[in-house]
Amino acid sequence: MSVKVIISGNHTEKTIERFKKLNADVVFVPSLADADPKNLAEAEIVAGGVNPQLLEKMPKLRFVQLFSAGANNYGWLPEQIILANAYGAYGESIAEHMLTTTLMAMKRMPEYLDMQKEQGWNLLKDIDRFAGSNILSVGMGAIGTAYLKKADALGAVCYGVRRSVHDKPEFVKRLVTVDEMDELLPEMDVVALSLPGTAEVKGMFDERRLRLMKKSAILLNTGRGNSVVTTDLIKVMNEGHLKAACLDVMDPEPLPKDHPLWTTSRVYITPHISGGYRAGVNYESVTDVVYRNIELVLSGEPPVHTVDRKLGY
Image (cartoon, rainbow, N blue to C red; front, side, top):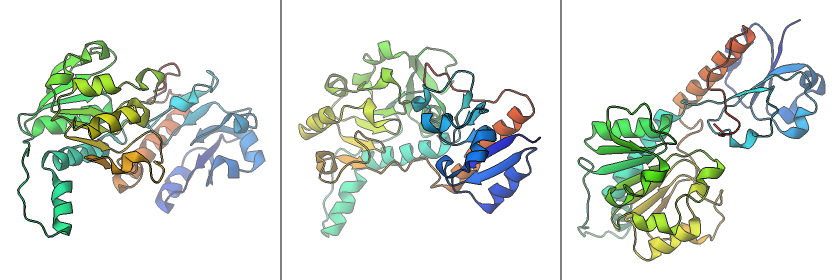
């Protein structure tokens, strides 16, 4: 009897045809909640999100493959069920977004675009150069590493923060732990956050740390919104501290209409668009990871990018 595999989400015909060739009984559904109860009862492998209520209906489940890199919401999943994420699939695309927003803020492009609407012709001061700038990536996973690699190629001096100091890339001048980060913050021109949504990083950048950054520094966040204390960020920005804050993630999210963050000066917001499937290459990268891991599990091999439940990634 073939192994039952359920793939959730909306997928291209090309992807459906590819997965149907796996040595398994593959079923596609818009979401697991739409799956036939019989298929849920027989499913051993699932690609997509699962919740505790659905898990009760899936006694044979042994492997869950996420389409996302984030996995911090799955600490409840029983240890006997293997959990894997799509680590690395989004790194290059998000790094390009980070590079775009860095240059945008350094060159004060949003202000020039506003000026164009008024048909103004003024020369703004404090235009920074990327080459020679000090850039700190807080988080050295696939995203932070890809961003610093691009920054190094453009002449920046790169620094990194990770949970433990190991495997320092050659393009990183110094790699430190969170405990040592504060001594670097006052020297950085850009501080880029690509942190996972774990309890340890919640509120990491509060008013104290934001004020450790120099007044002319730029803050980027493409990790999790709650790593920055929103009220503290609004306060320091309103007081003229920090050149810019470029946020693709924020807390709360989605950001409600009329929230003061929308109109805080020099805060530039994008609606969590740096990753996901908005770039076609992201979709292909993610489905490649998912396909390969399911293929490995079906052949009795361990999948790659398994999630440590305690760490959340």
